[in-house]
Image (tube, rainbow, N blue to C red; front, top):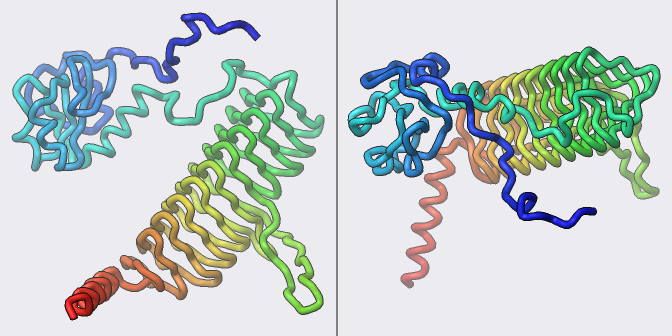
Length: 354
């Protein structure tokens, strides 16, 4: 190993400055209107309002940062109509209904490398230090990094990347432009296109199935699969068990945070959002556009209706209707939960005065 030099001690830059583009181009990407100012000014980066300097783009989404907006030195700022008057002279306002969503579109154009996890290597091929079974089918442009293992009869779509130490077990199928991060494990699974699997994810292992009894717990074979729709993203350390007698399903566009546990036979709809450390027990059903806050728990065999939101640290014991907002233990309508909490505080305050 070589001794570190002054050059190697310098902090690395993983996402270098973006290419220079005009404010007009930024507005087109963002779907925003240039309210005033010069659309030909150039932008080469993005910065928070209080760190904005000429050549950078800022945005305002949270009104608590209005003071920073009034003093920013950024060249341009994505802003909604209600805060337009606060944009200082000299800053080009880019009017948009949703500044944060517009920012996401711009960042995707300026920093395309930030849309997927970083590769461990710049090589765009199958590493000589990876193991790929002869029967595996790899599409055009597939990258397999050092230490990865690709099992028999695996099919991997064009443009996909398998990170170092990742294992794709026999007979699994991955669509086009998927990314499987370092040390992830994929077995008994079928993935759509553009699925992002972050490091340390485990897909398709046994569901927790035992026939309990006084004479010992008899293991029940888990014979289903994990089926992941296109454009799903799964955070580091998340585990998704394969089905017992049917498939475990994650619908297209769903985003799952780090350290989430999803049990066997769970059926998650399209475009759901599941935040970190959520546990979903076997055979639960989440319809489309469900959102579940961090550290919440969902009992087995319950159904959560379309578009329903569950607050963090809540426990869902029974079915929840579509379109509701629920929280607490057990989860109940948010208004009821808040009223009960306030009533308990009042009672506690009264008791303390006695």
